[in-house]
Length: 115
Length: 114
Image (cartoon, rainbow over all chains, first blue to last red; front, top):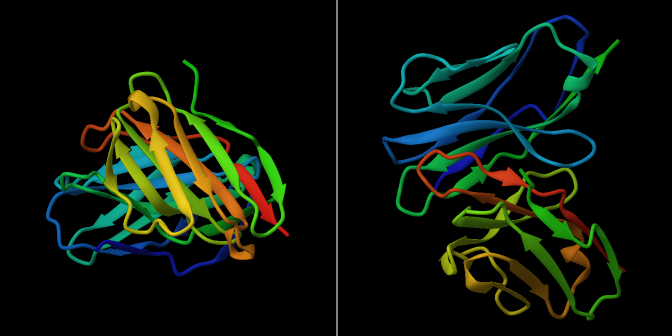
């Protein structure tokens, strides 16, 4: 079974600075996806960035980038030039490459961006 | 494009009562997920449908929870009877179902059992 671990329950960062959120996972699969989802206080979960395990190049979406270390089973999220609107819960998720496409989440990191 | 719709947004019930939640996924999405999110925790998968068939319900407390997906579209999740520990946000999500496709989430239903 897949497990996802986020060891930082809470983090804070000053506006315009850079912050990195950590995630490790455990899987026996060789092909899978990893996601970072954001859940603002309004509660609706939205996708921030995704990474396919077969791709060695780290994914980037504007101010969001990942550091994917497949051998170490590590998948961290870097947010550059943090903005007040980045304040949210961030969830790391593993998407199974098996036939059932199971999506497993970590416990989340509450990120607060301070002005 | 309309998103995932869920209702009701909030529900307060007494323990041992029953409750039902409704989800309308994005049109054309084959995969539908129900997650339970207890305050301060990550979402826990309760049940996953592929069209109208169940793919995974290993974490669904089947003695009190049930779910169905009508004609591979709308879905309902029912709790009967409810317990205090069922207080949580119930999230519905859907995706096209292809490998690596994004799951889109609804606003969720916040259930309080008193």
